[in-house]
Structure formats: C-alpha cells, structure tokens
Image (cartoon, rainbow, N blue to C red; front, side, top):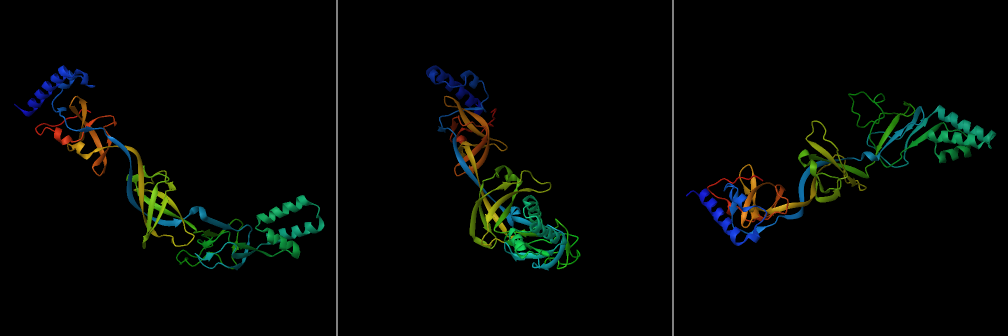
Length: 366
C-alpha cells in the first residue's frame, strides 16, 4: 500500500471515528469535505499547537553621510545703495567674522543726499513729523542704523559713507558675483570677489555669511530602506576620525522623492556645533533604528520551506491540519515574522516538520 493511500485511509477512519464519538468537538470544517480532499493537503496529528504571537520589533541598518552647512543659517549681505567701496575689511574666502564686525565702508552719493535732506528738514520744518518719519524710513532702508542716525543729528553733518557690518557670527563663503570675480582660470579660494575701489550696484549681493553653530548631517539612504525612513527615526552617529565619539539624534527631514539617476534618498539630521568640532565635509556613519508595530511571529520550527514557497500547518479540525502558504520575514532568535498568510487567529503546529509526508509533496490552497 502506498504511503499516500495509507495516510488517506488513516484520515478517513480517524475522522469517521471522531465524528461518531466526539461530534461535539467538530470544528469549522465539515468532516466529509475534509476526507474528500487530497492527502497532500491535510494531515492528522496530535503535535503541539499554539497561536501566533504579536510584538513590536526594531530593525537597524547603517548608512553613510557627510556634514554640510545648515541652509537656514546663511545670511546674504547686499548693498542697500549703489556706491564705491572705500574700505574693505574682509580680504579672503572663509575668513571668520563676528556679529557686528565691520565688513566694508561704502561711499554713496545717494545716501549722502538723503542725509542732507534729513538735516535740512530738521532745521527748517521740525514740526513736520510726517515728513521727518518718511525720511527716517528711507534712511533705514538705505542701511542707516538708529545709532548712525543719532550721530548724524548730533554732528549735524552728513556722512560720506556707510559702514556695512556682519549680521551674525560665521565666515565669508562666497564672492559677490560672476562679473566682479577674477578670471575663471585663477585660483579664487583666497579672494572675496571685491576690492577697495570696486563699484557695487544697489541690491547686489556683497557677501554670504555661513553660520556653523548648527550644521546638517546629510545621510545617503539606499532606496531599499526608503519605506523604513521617517521623520523622528532614531540615529546613532559616528564621525570619521572620532570612532569613540557617538552622537544620538533623530531624522528631521526626508526627501519626498527619489532624484533621477540616484540609487538613494537623502535624510537630514540637524546637529549642534557651538563648539566648532564638526567640520564641513566630515564623513560620518549613522546607525538607524526602525521600530515597527505589532508584527506576527511564529516559531521557526513551525515554518516548512518548499523551495519557492513556505507553509505552516493550521489546525482546521480535531487533530486535522491544513497547509497554508505564508511569506516569512525577519528572523529574531527562534522566531520568524510572517508578513502574509496568517491573521493571528489561527492555531498552528509548533513542529511542522513532523507533519510532512516524506513521500508526498505538500500542496497548499491557502
């Protein structure tokens, strides 16, 4: 007698016996329907059973990145009036500067004329507050501070120039413009793009001041992890040359889309750098911890691999088990997550290998 026929006969006899003696224990499947199925779908056994478990999981992976400027901490310094640079106090790119430090002195005939008008109105129409306020507003727009205006009133003499000061601590990063820059084949790393005597136009950008008290760490995340990256994800960062110095932070921003031709997306971490220890361009590695919700887990012993597919045995009757196709996921110790194939309400065999007929091929319709 073949093994398949033998198993079929055992199923038939056992099921009929159970139906006659323990009809109150019959479960969701009709016994006649069960015994009419092929023997490579159903197995009768008294192996240990259990229900799948649900618990949260944490998945970690490592990506690389680099320290960059915080784009929100860049200040543009523009000329409020057209004029000629009389004194230049910044001489080279990346020169460190402090807030309030002099950058240049700019002579402007327009500014001088506006100051003279202001003094004239104060002397001849002191009661015309509307006109006085209007001129004061224009002086403010031209870059004259309240302190400079007070000096103008006390001295009763128009200043020939205005001092441009830095609005923040940082360093000069960029030349003014292409037309005022030196020839393209020259080394411009130690050149600001402007000189004493240069003429600048109104609204022309003179300097860009980059602050480094906060910096960005830009992480290149492979697209295979794209679904795991979210704002608020915990990261543990190690910088090149400082392997013993670990910084913990969270993701503040994730690129909403993948750029064409790039096999990764960019995730951003904002870091405090008041100490100045993080230099722009420093390479770093970041370990990310992705926490998932309650996932379904079963013992690894309850899953049988059939090559391209995997199955677990679900109890469908009194000591009757049916093979269900599942998609295993992450393995944690003696457990494996199930992403597809089970709902969590089933009762499964703990040791599935004991139910496999060595002479037949398990086939699942679930």
